[in-house]
Picture: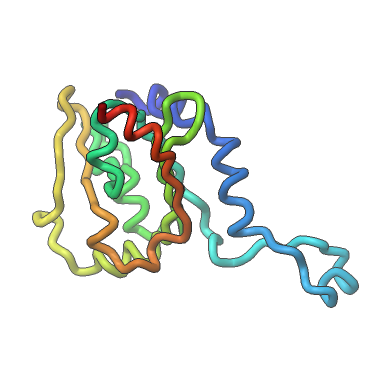
Length: 167
């Protein structure tokens, strides 16, 4: 799919993603900050550098991939991909989700610094890379179990959706 198509799908629920991420990066300011800087809320530095956002479509096979996340690895156009940008140090966190088009059925918030540290020095030949059917892009798949648990900042699964789809 094209960037525009991918982006349009993801943007359907991006405001909901912002609502879910906000409690992790915005906190009530200590009294001293409120009194001296007129700030009732403060933004934590942990997500400085940005938050990547990815939304996959929930479908009949989604339940098999609940612990998986993928990153675009290559595009025929030569455009820099998620994987390259993340490994180059861009984005501190990632909100990775599945949606039925109306709401999130599964999501997790990931610390990309943990991902980068874990993958440092790994030969890219050993990555699980799949070329998409159209031959115009590829993705690399990862399983959460292969990373330290501190990579997952928060997560949610709507169990009913996966049970219904698996039936």
